[in-house]
Amino acid sequence: MSPPSPRRRISADNLLVLLAVGRLGRFTSAAESLELNHTTVSRRIAELEATLGGPVLTRTSGGLELTELGQEALAAAEQVEGAVSDLRPRRDGTSRLQGLVRVSTSDGFGAHVAGPALARVQRRHPRLSIEIVTATRRASQYRSGVDLEIIVGEQQVYRAESSKLTDYTLALYATREYLESAGTPATAAELADHPLVYYIESMLQVDDLDAIRRGISSRRDSLTSTNVFVQLEATRAGAGIGLLPRFMASPCTDLVPVLPDDVSSTLSFWLVARRESLRRPAVAAVVSGLREYVADHQRLLVGER
Image (tube, rainbow, N blue to C red):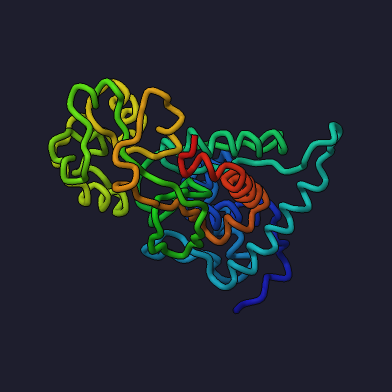
């Protein structure tokens, strides 16, 4: 490993650019977060490598990854970030924690859990900005432009850390009017006589959600959607029997459980993030806030009224 050039000082700005690239894995994503252009980010990294005397990043199938020298430089960059944050005045007595954290999660969990949980985090840290991007999908291989993913089910992830956040339950629901008209199934086999409201099978990317669908005898899809809120409202409108998260359906007084003792499934939400992102104080605060909220709302997640 070549030593730094004695005639060139290491630029703190260049270290902070490396910090953004290391966390997000892409020049374009780092440029967006820093409000710079791609060329400037590339030039700053090249300057840092020239100063340090070796490469700090390498390209892999999973995107840009830090070299051994890059890991050392990133540790220094985190100290620079912390020192700059500590120097900022705190006249109102609020937290110094600031920056942008972008979270990707499913639409239902985003609205019912992540939204209120992260609103609480933001109130504690008013200078912190949080973006919630919704999509029901597998864990990303590149994690470009996202600090933290919340996904359904445990999955193999590349150069990232994953940990279980919480369990939740899916169950069958319908309106009383629908059941009075079409009949209430007394056994799981009788579900074959009823249309099912659920995800579009051919577009479903999450294996655990797909496995549940295959395990239900009903093959009569009525109204299907990639959006769980559409599924919920279609079920409430009498389109059929909906397979829905209990934390969304059980508060709806116009819906009643169908075969609650025979058909239900417990799944789990997992947190996935790059190792570099998890060391960032703002991301750590978001993770802590999510864990605190789900611990306080376990009854909601399992669907108790």
